[in-house]
Length: 323
Ligand code: AMP
Ligand code: MG
Image (cartoon, rainbow, N blue to C red):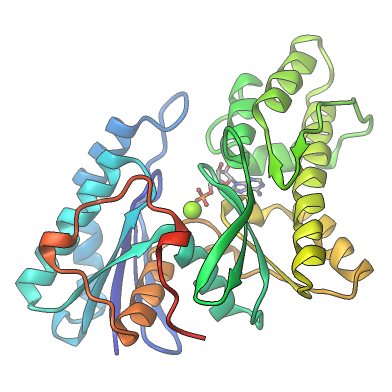
């Protein structure tokens, strides 16, 4: 079965084609803000301008007749962006007379991670621009055991980067700077039970920069603090749930320091650590296509009249009918 998946919950506009075993292709056309952060209207305008070309590229590599299913990211995400993708997906589905499946974006990160690693029943640390969650499966549902109480960690990193005059996305730039950090400056470490908060940490790190602390040391202190918080909560989830696998997904998961901290923590407690390749860490169409395939195989299909976008869609809302 060949599935086309379209992702566009925020900055990333991406189409992927997969079958049961392979990723056949991924085409990306991301929105990159000229200045400042992601603006929902501008991002959706970008998606709307770029999606015809993106889909044409896909269909120049895979013939439309070969595609058996159309999957799209139905939420969570920015409403204007979601609507562009949903409209395109409905149109393609009707035109090709192929079924449609609306996919939860967070579920797609988790399932593509499991598919592309050996992880079976992991505690998942999902760290992206808008989301920060610690997720594990209990029976037929994924449950969120901890999450951010304010902004996503990626959003926090991007805010700090912007404040220091660095371009969007800030993650890779902060990571690079942090490698040359020498001096740790104390920053607020905010873990409340299993939940986390990053906005005070971002403000305090911005203040360090305003007070002329070296950029490298600001980046270093920020990463050490934020990533230790994430590692602590992931470890506690492993302990509480008595699980022995951790899986890192989401755009921030590309960060080598975060990977390193989690790897050390897992080693210390005899757990296995997994992360998918970088091209599958951030938002991409292949994860939507693969999860759509899983869902369709297990009885899911979204009728056009039920395909309205869900900006607040939660992973807990989807019954997981597969192993
Ligand atoms: P996503 O929303 O999952 O596509 O992830 C996007 C977020 O990942 C943005 O906030 C980026 O700044 C962040 N990001 C990308 N690469 C890195 C990295 N190497 N280290 C930290 N954050 C990163
Ligand atoms: Mg994401």
